[in-house]
Length: 343
Image (tube, rainbow, N blue to C red; front, side, top):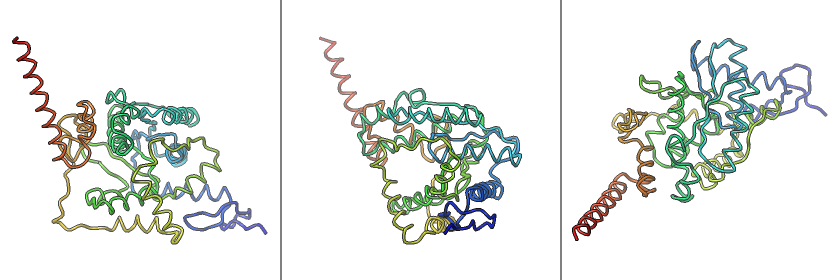
């Protein structure tokens, strides 16, 4: 026997919302989904009229739904935003080159201008070449650090007021778990923030999908027939986040509300004043936001250019020893060449 839509619209339900367990028809699900994202934007004052906003676009389900719904809500509620898609090409053959075609399709479908920046033009390296140097154990460290800074570089180039990212509720809950397991109090204190980096020298990042379940994003994209790229990154299977995701899914089977429970717990966490927190500033080398000198991106890039790809992996003292050893070897080699030339 067909189940009626819980919104009392008279239509039959076609889905059960993972977030609320409500049985809804397609139209009522669309209305509820869009209303919740609109409420998140308005209640958290994410945007101001007249602002230029870059939508971080990867071609995946999250960024595709984010671009679609921001365009929809911007027109429906007169946000007055100037939207632009910002994509980063990490240089991963068979993955990013294909997903960028999806982003270009989004550009045409939603009539939003697109800017693509590549690791190659920004850093002189592609992820394919980096993996050749570092292997598949720490490659996600390079990609994550470079991608975050690449978005900042792109935002500065486009002169936007903020960057909207497609981080969903599952992503944030996973990040809370990862930071707890790593004992990373600095990131744990800010990972649930819906808006970050809104200082004078930094461009704010906002998460309009912060309270939106990943399953509902997939359902919305499916029933709206949105075009998105669903293949996993070829270098991602060994990522630490994958273990946190698997653990979260196990918990969700036992307690469906665990995703929101973890997010709300993270929001309520407080640390003693004696706990040392890194101060966010700007890197003395590249001039972009950083909580260390030089920034992580500059250290990783230095390691690649020096032929020491593990320079920025692990403790700073280890990297200092690697740098000093190489400098000493170069000095000895140069001295030997000078002696050789004298003869």
